[in-house]
Figure 1: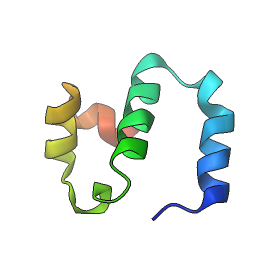
Figure 2: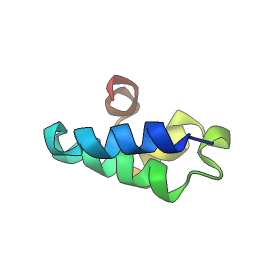
Figure 3: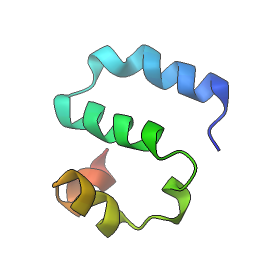
Length: 57
């Protein structure tokens, strides 16, 4: 699970992220309990973005 300091840092940087990066961050925060078990393909399917977009982010 992400530490509170990492979550705080990510939230602080949110304004400098692109729309897609923010959507990916939101997805990660919503799925903190199981994000470690999801594949890049599952995440990309859920967000309707390419696997390349996920890996670049």
